[in-house]
Length: 69
Image (tube, rainbow, N blue to C red; front, side, top):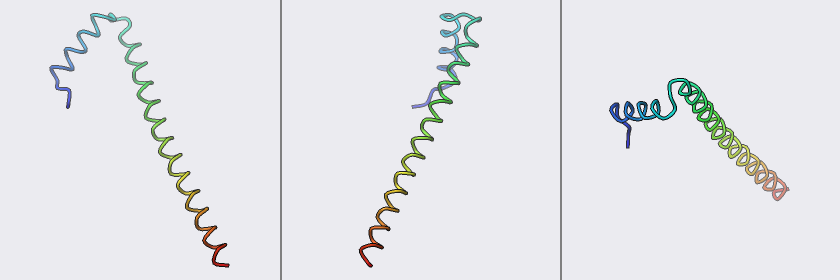
């Protein structure tokens, strides 16, 4: 489901009415930082998963090498 132009405009008008023109830039900045932090967290989690997978593969190959000897 995508948000269209009309829905986005309605959301922005409601946010402007609720928070006012002075607080809206602060709210946008806070929202941007939150989204940025979320993306960084997702990237770190993906990297952690990759690192764990590599360690498991290395352990498996070491064990296989030891068993062959």
